[in-house]
Image 1 (cartoon, rainbow, N blue to C red):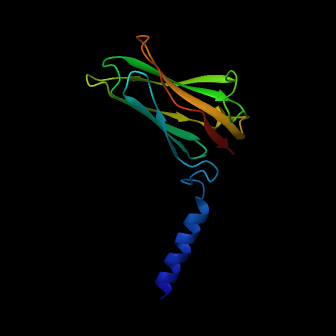
Image 2 (image 1 turned 45 degrees about the vertical axis):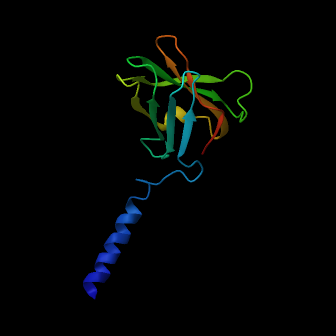
Image 3 (image 1 turned 180 degrees about the horizontal axis):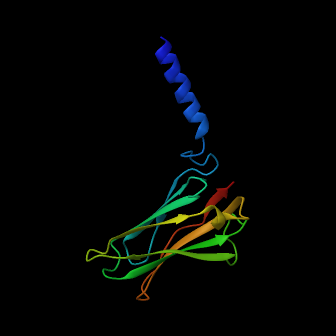
Length: 149
């Protein structure tokens, strides 16, 4: 009985020491965002916010059925505190370059640090694009509302 009590105290103490290691963002939940193109094929952005001291957000990118052997620049078009994405974006942030394989598929990701989100607490509109190096059709999302805390 004493041994299990000691283990419980040690576990509780360990949890108290490391409360911020793996908590997800309570304000903005992981979102899967579809991208479309006039050429067919499709793209996806998985936007996950950890709000950690090292990783603020982790985005994963995927293209399927795009032009084979082409590089695509992933760009976030940020409409600060504008949830309708009306007008011109306040910032355009390049995050990753994906290169499609022979089947026209590609994967990639990007990690954002807390400094990347400085001054953006609140809700803003974001449009993701994947622009091909060959000048072909761009993959684009709709206006997504992202809330940062």
